[in-house]
Length: 148
Figure: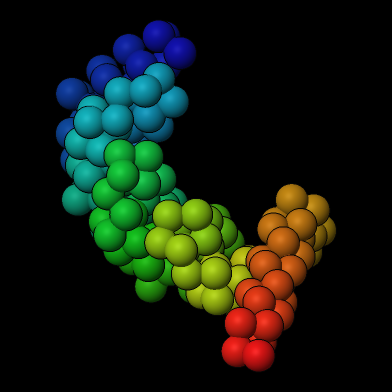
């Protein structure tokens, strides 16, 4: 990781107008827990290349890890406005709605959309979908019970 960081840092200095080195450096920073630096580099990446949905998705991940959920949502949605069929931000947006924004209905829609775009399936996400559906059924049963 230190060698990759040095190489990407050198590239960002010699070619500051290229988004790729900024994005890769941001990922290195994020993976090593330096979230402020990660966000800064990923923001530079999207400024250099605003039509690259991968950069927006990575920025969304960094924002989410910082607890900036509204910014994460915006970044994921921006990625999807560029490429509506890009599965990663669909999944990440589903996770955001599920775990951080407490909107299981929207999360379920996004997980289903992600699974439809994933030809080989995703066993982990399929389990999340089943769990959300079970929670929804239990909630309806609880509501009916409370009304009696």
